[in-house]
Image (cartoon, rainbow, N blue to C red; front, side, top):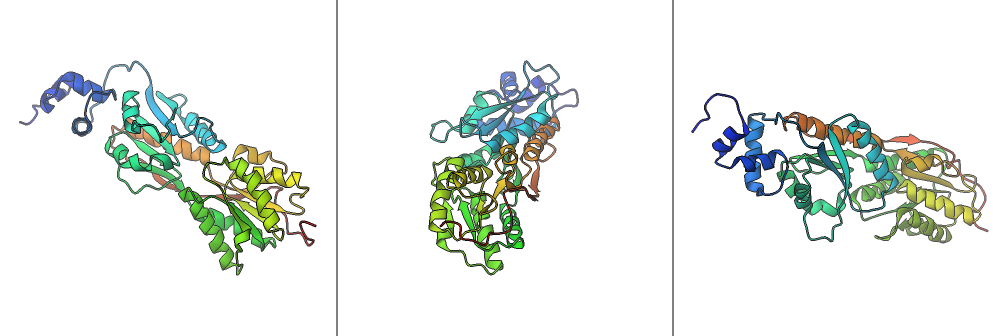
Length: 342
C-alpha cells in the first residue's frame, strides 16, 4: 500500500515498513539489535524520503579511524592531523579504534556495538576480507592508500609506482647509477614502489643486482629494518652510491646506521625516502623524500564522510588519486668518486 501524503515521522516509517518504532530508532542511531538485511531495508527507505532526525543527539556523531597497532606510526599521526583539522568545529567525534586481526569479532560488529556512524581505514591490509561486508553495511567507509573496486567504499590513494620512479629519475639525473633499495613486499603500495624502482632503473639502462636490494621481514618495525637492513645491504654492496628506502622511517634508521659505520651522508652516500613525515625534516641530515600529502588524505576522507552523512547518503564518497612531489633536502648529492668502504 502506498504511503499517504503527510509529514514523515519515525512512527509512520515504522508502520510503512512493518517494524517497531524502536527498530527504526536503532537504525537511525546506529545501535545494535537489528540484523543487517532489515537494517539495509530501513536505510534504503530513510534515504528515499531523505529522512533526518529533528531532535538533539545525546552525543556527537562518532567516526572511527581504525588502526591495527597501539603504537601510532608517523604516517597514521599525519593522517590523524588532517582528520582532526577538519572535524574540529563540527559535530563529528573522531576516535582511534585499535582492531587486531586475530580477534574473533568482526569489525562491523564492533562498529555497530559502539554506535559508529562512519569509518576511515588507512592502508587496511588486515581487514581486506571484511571490506565487502563494510560496503554493504550502509556505513560510509573511506579507505586511505588503497584503491578498492567495491561500490559503497570511498578511496583516497596515491600512485606509489610513479612516486618511486620520481625518486630514481632524480638520483640518476644528478649522476647516480648504483642505487640500492630498502623495501617491503608485504603491502601492495610497497610492491608498487619496488616495481617502480626496478622499471625506472631498467629504463635508464641500469641492471639491478640482487645484492642491491634488501626486503623487510614481516614483523620488523620500519625504522629498525632501515637500521639493520642497511647494515647488511652496504656490506653486500659497497659499490652503492645511493639508497632508496620504501618509507621515511626506514630511511632515517638507515642514516643512523650509516653514521655509526662512519659513512658520511651525503658526501659518501645519498639517501631518499617516501612520504615526507615530520621527522624527515629534522633528520641529520634532513631527508630528501617523495612527498605524499597524508594530512590532505585524512582531511578529504573525513570531509567525504561528513558530506555523505549531511546529504543522507545522496552524495557519493570520494574516489581520488593524490599527486606526489619531490622534496630535495641535504641527504642527497652527486655520487662520490672514491670507494665507500676501505
